[in-house]
Image (tube, rainbow, N blue to C red; front, side):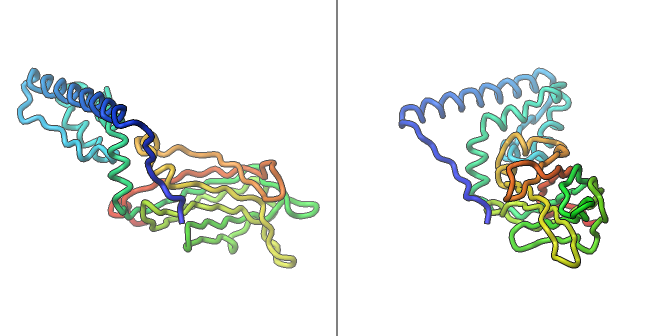
Length: 236
C-alpha cells in the first residue's frame, strides 16, 4: 500500500488562532474585492463556489465565471486555493476518491548492458499494488535506446494508493531475465501536493533507473503520469 499521508500541526493554541484569523481575513478581503469588482462591472448574481477549489476542473469553472470581469489571467482561483490549501488537504484525506492512474511510457535512453558483448534486450514491467503489466513478449533486441510509445491504466483509490514501480528488464531466454534498473514514483505525494494538482498538463519526466548493486544510474526512462477521476477518463 502507499505510505500513510497525514497532517501534523505543531503550534500553540494562540498561534493557531492567530493563523486562522489572519488567513480568514485575507480570504474574506479577496472575496469582497471580487464581489465589489463584479458589482462595478454590472455583473449580477456573482458568486464563487469555493467548494470546487480542490480540483483543476473546479478552478477552471470558477475562472470562467470571472471571465466578464477581465481578470481571468490573474489566476485568482489558484490564489484562493493556496490560501485554503491546508483545509483542502484535510478534506481530501477524509475522502475516498476512485481514479485512473495513466502512465505514458515514451522511450529509454542509454540503458546499461546486461549481455556480454552486446546491448541489452529491454522490455518494461509496470506495477501498482497487485496490478501489473509486462511487455516481455515485446522485448527489443540489442537496443540501448528503445522506444515504447504506450500507455497503461491502473484503477486506484486515494488515499492509500501504492507506489508506481517501473522495471526495465533484459530479456534472456536461456539464462533468465536480468533487471537493468528500477524507478519508483510515490503517487500520493503528487496527488496531495497542490502544486502538482494545479498543473494543467503533467510534465514529461526523465527518470533515472537504478540497480540494487550500484548507486550509479543504469539509464533513463522518458515518461509522464496523469491522475484523473475515474469518471473523467475516456476509454481507448
